[in-house]
Image (tube, rainbow, N blue to C red; front, side):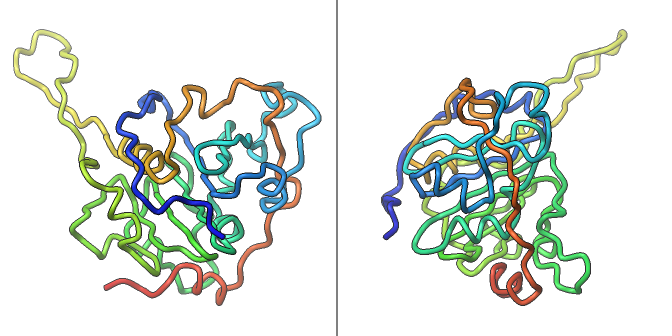
Length: 248
């Protein structure tokens, strides 16, 4: 049975400074047992502290209890848990899997050897947010250029699955005054992205919890794992079932 509370949890303020985080990959699942989560993603405990030089690989992950379930992060720019295969495995049997990624290649979501590429057809290029349930993608979108009123920018079987959590979230860039150089008196403006905070708040609302300040690299030596046996890649047919019908 799903352990997720279907009521919208109000978590209004992200406590992490994502402005300095250039690469990020984090996955939440409603599984509440760390050993089960590690098994589902093919991970085993690290023999060393994950913060040691020996652990500086993209296969390193941290797994901690968080909110209504478990949080998986990749402190060294890995994206293993953003793969559709892992999202499917974590969301089966009545569970949820929610992933937030930016700054990392979207190649895990692309079947480059086939003509089917629904994720890129939805416009994802710089970041993505994905929400899976019962082994398939309910909704996914590129938060960098997200328009909640445009259904064509979403993928999945149930593209309105997170609409109840989107209230008051602003994904559009904020114009801020830029630093002036030289003697120019002309005002200068630049765009400050807000999609990171919008998506982080969205994930907090789904989980019913606030991110800890050390979310990217938890301050505990015992949370480190390595993905030793990655979940096998999906076939084209499995990928099509996971992604859902093409959007108009």
